[in-house]
Structures are given as C-alpha cells and as structure tokens.
Image (tube, rainbow, N blue to C red):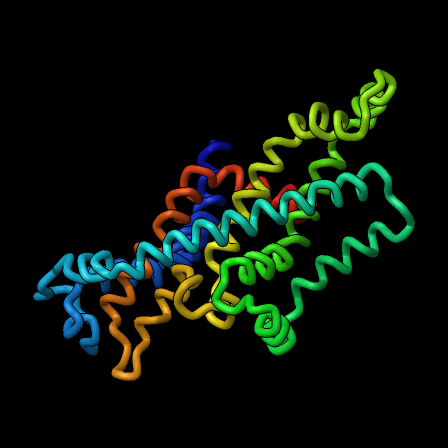
Length: 276
C-alpha cells in the first residue's frame, strides 16, 4: 500500500521530467529528421513526415567536402589543447587554494566565477586587435588560448572542490614521510582526485568543442573548427536546412557519444565539483 502511494506521488514528477526532457531534445530530434530530407522537403511549410523521399545524400555531400575533415581535426586539436592547458594551470592553482588558503581565497574564487558572467562580445575588439598584431588570426593557438582562459575558472572550481575533500591527515602523513611538493601532488593527491580530474576534463572538453563565438571571430579557413564549418552553410543564397542539419549531426555526434558513455562523470562534475 505504501509502495503504491509512493508511486502515485512520483508519477506527476516523472511525467514532468519526461516532458521537460522531450522539450529539450526536440530541436535535436527535429534536426535529425531534417537531415534525411531533400532540400525541397526540408523547407516545406507546414513540415511533413509522410510522402518524403528520405535520403542520405546530405550526409554524402557533407562528408565529400574536404573541409569537414580539416575542421574536425581542428576541433579535436583545439578542444583537446584548450582542455589540457586549462587543467595544467588549474591544478596548481586549486592546490594552492585548497591547502594554503588565505583571507582572500574565497573572494578570489567568487571573482573568477563571476568572470563567466561577462559577455564574450565585450572582449572581442581588444582580443581581435591583439591577435591581429601578433599574427595569430586564423590560428589554432589563438582559439586554444581564449578557450583555455574562458574555461579556467570552471576547472579551478571543480578541482578545488575535489581537493578540499581529501583528508588533511593523508597530506600531513605524506609530508612527515618526507614527500616533496611535487611528490605530494603527483603520488598522493592525483590518484585520490583522478575521478574529479576526469569529470573536469570531460566537461571542459565538451564546452570547448561546442564553443562558437571565438571560433567564428578569430578563424576563417585554416583553423576553423566544426562550429565554423556548420555556420558556412548559411550562404547569401539562403540556408541549406537539410545539409545544415546533416553537418550539425556529424559535428555533435562525437560529443553525444562521449556524453552518453560518461554521463555519470559529467553529472558528478556538475553537481559535486561546480556547485559544492
């Protein structure tokens, strides 16, 4: 009886959760359906699903374009490079804040988090001029640097939260055994917070992979990632909805696969590392 009452109470919440999930996933599902339509059927109003000549031609045309593979390689190198750089900078910073805090540590953490509220367009002009003067426009280095700086506060917050959970007695014992600072970090702390490092890497890689603002403004051809490749289907002649949807599906597929298999680590990173 108690079990039946509990299920009846949970049913409305479950229904709302499914409706919310369907609402969030609807654009993705619609793009998936559109990617298999011919261009003429993709722009039909009202949209229809019956009587459509379903085709794979949009995927064939996108994959036949050599620009897709160049942009995919750029996405891997930019997202991976920005994530690794952010982790290398965030780890010592998080260690210092966790094990050698000062009166200003909490204020510094809050200030770093507040920088995420700053609209990127507010920095566009000075960043663009600096990259132009340093001959960094349309290079991977410029995008990697901006994505690294942009995701650094999140990486520091997540690693800081995980390092704070390490019992101080373990660190003290290592120091009493004569462990140097590098040994303390590499041999003691890193194995303990390895799940936190993995969730931080996954979340930062996903954010860097999906970023488009700096990619569109700092790159044109050679260093353009997949987000810029997708925007290329908006031509003066109009939008090619079917090919745009196919390119979007091919671009987000790696992140969707990674997110599906690592959803537990991502949720842990979002709830434990970023909030706690």
